[in-house]
Image (cartoon, rainbow, N blue to C red; front, side, top):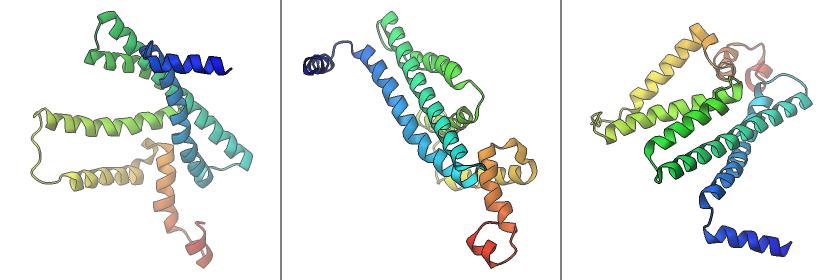
Length: 201
């Protein structure tokens, strides 16, 4: 066993097969990161907002964590494999390789319409919108504002989301609906000091 471990360590330290080994390490990192991100989030959200028995909640947490971890691992594996193949075919790395590989991986892995994928895609959408604005400023396509526009951004985001919640809440994600119901609807309901201060309702 020690000989096998030494041989593997020697291979890893040698730098040979770096692209192929990076694909395998990407699979591993995707799986681990998926668990780290999803398990705590699912635990908190499930026990705060989901109905059902204790074992139903644990099963739901395990399923969401597995799905997030598997999807992220599969995507990283697919992305790194495709970019490595395109680099090998063209003898050099090109910018469009990233887009094509991620486009294919996104369609295959995150294209299935389910709650976990919806949440991940929505999370990324907000980040890339921010990124595109910053890229526009960096490339001088957008003029850099002379004052901080973040307060106006915050005002617009919160104005739109509360208007949607109050008048068109069915268009919002179920998890966001649950959070906002707790904050804005449930705070209108009480019967005595107990459900006013100690319990929600």
